[in-house]
Image: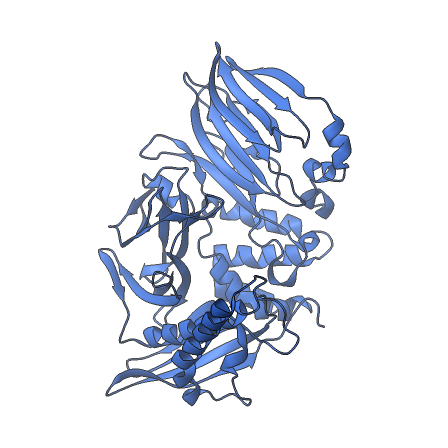
Amino acid sequence: MNRALLLLSLPALLLGTPARAQAAQATKTTLSSCGAYTVKTVENGFDDPPDRVTLSRAGVTYATVEDTMVSVDWCRDVTGDGVPEVLLAGFSGGAHCCFTHHLYSLTSPPRKLLTAFSAHSDTLEARQLDGRGPLELVGSDWRFAYGYGMSFAESAPLPVVYSLLPTPGGARFVENTRAFAGFMQTFAARMNSGDVFSGGVLVAYATRVLTQGAAAADAWAQGQPQPFRAWLANYGPDVVQDLSDFGMWDWPTRAGVNADAGRSGIGGAFLTPGVRSYLAQVIGPDAATLRLYRAQGSEVVTGPMLLSVPVTRDGHREPVVPVWPQVTVRRASGRDDALLRDARSGSVRYLPVRVSAGGMTELKDDALGVTARLLGDLSGVAGHVAAQFRDVKRTPEQQAEVRRRVQAAVTRAQPWLADWKGQEAFALERLGNFTFSSVRLLTDTPTRAQAVMTTTVGFTDAKTDSEYVNGERFTMIVNLARGAQGWGVTDWTLVPRTGELYEE
């Protein structure tokens, strides 16, 4: 596959046109027809008001898409019922983002079959992938853009396949990529048929994770040339975690959730080793609800509500949710637990939970529970230390409150230092960056456990002038034991992780 064709699209080329020339263009109106409907586009270049495309019939408007740029991608029958569908797109403007696609079946009245966020990819391609029935729609998943030390020019997408499947609200196109393992493998092979580049290597690795499992992907990575071999070894656990929800975004829709409702989640073997399920939070106008979604035959079913939290709005009217699923935790048994990021108290903690078909239980007297407290306390210190360098004006009273919060966080985390076994002192007062990307319990017996995390850790110094404190990657190793008083940490340390695309 030609890498330039893969990464370059017409809207990206248009971005090189000076804004003044775009603004000088007069408003352009275009009329076309699709089935019995009229499609009208009104384009203003990059001027206000935004461009607009409408779908109407006999003077009644049934759908409108507004964005910096709009387009009519195609009009054709992709469902096989003899009624055409129309694909409308909006482009927000920007170097690499963002396209959103809207598919309507032109029944009477029209029925929306899909809304797809496509990031950098400017259309959905209709293809017959399974040799029968309705066509599939092929798009792109850009979750790895800029990831793991890559520039955007080096990045590449994973394929996304939408299939027409039944849902409680009627048949619609839903994300169904994992059902097309052969197509995914062919996509990765074609991407890597020419010059080797980091995005292609990452897509090949990720495809093996998704179709063959992490162990097979790691074995393949060991045969790659440098620097890719060390790079994949460095970021492999992060990639696996970042892929945990791949192919399950629409599982709530298939179980009856409104297709346009926001959601976030993590995938894992939460019920049975080797069997995927989706721990997802669906975001409504006033509340976000957490449920477990799982496959049952050809259908997706949902369990009871596990948690409901209120939703507020920020200054841009975007939802603010105080609790969400953050990390899938693989236990030595092959079963997964989860860490929820919980900010309901005003400070962040990580809530370790075990999910069953009937409910969710917080893991308190458990090795993961102790590990979660350590991670939460270190994250809390880093957040408060970094906040001191935020570019805002503060009164003396506000500055004193910031210092008080830092000291309170340091005091709360101080007892953990008794078990620190690093070669150098761990300077809590200067910890300005602490994040973790994956969590695994490699040892997990009734009396002993070892938790291993990929982390980024950074400390402030005399030159620090921003809340964004640089950090380095480490493997954090926490050894734990169960005694008469329950589980506790025996020692913890940080081991530098090596293997970057570009060594400084």
